[in-house]
Image 1 (cartoon, rainbow, N blue to C red):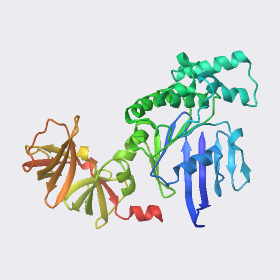
Image 2: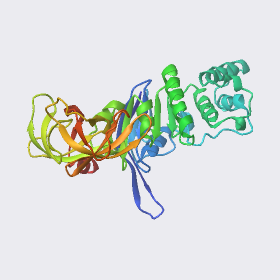
Image 3: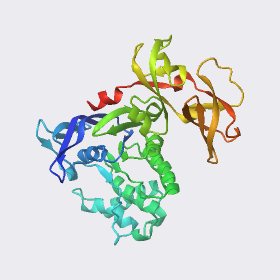
Image 4: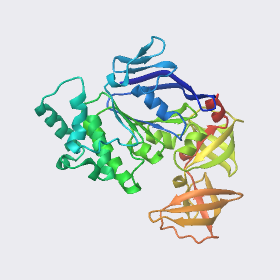
Length: 374
């Protein structure tokens, strides 16, 4: 539905220096999917979104929505943003303070090129207000809505034109933590019910994992990895992706041998010999970095039955989080982070066994970061 080929955007900063905001961006978003651009500030995600919207004019590349090319540097095509027919919700909701809920939602229909009757406007507005659960507040002044209600009103205004594509730029960042969690559910429900193709920009990893069909992790203007939320989290391809999306243990090692089974290897590491999984093919002698999520470091006071990836350590620190315990466990000279159920009550300073499934030790070539940035 949305296809981006070799998009490149460069601009000059206030010091007159060139900034490569987006470099060689290639995306293919299927119809009805929720696609997220995830990354730290300055990684190029908003520049990419604004390029899709028509608010930025890239230096190179092509953007196609459906069968319509909205931008092509090579063919000198640039469709203005107001003619692309996309819906967009910004970080600041830009609600009209002098209008009520109905008036804010109806505004795009009233000023657009296509003329609608009063009855048609009423029907379309009430349909989207019902979808965002604001139909009972149609006459309320916009300034008297809560933050979450204003966010839903901004969504309703973007949806009322039945856009081919919905673009969302950090729309939840101004909400408090609890409301942000509630709005994630609302956004997911709306997207599923309306099946509208959505591109979402955020720096919040939990938001990206919770909402998306696919996630593109960006850094320094480039896409580091594209995949499902589970793939991004469980099978990171670079050290940056592993570190940015969630918390992880990084363990240096070197490949000793390949085992039977796709992607299975024996690694000589800081923890000793361990068995691991690698997405990329590696060979004996290669330096690797292992990513091991804390929740995959299983702790017990009794020695596990497993024959590989088991170590005796010492409980060094623990933090009670209510639904979980975060641990620091010393294994030789190395400290491992672990997250367990709070039922484990091993005192600090006492021995504890750590076990890791081989498939949860994800090995990446140590030079992956250098290759990705090249």
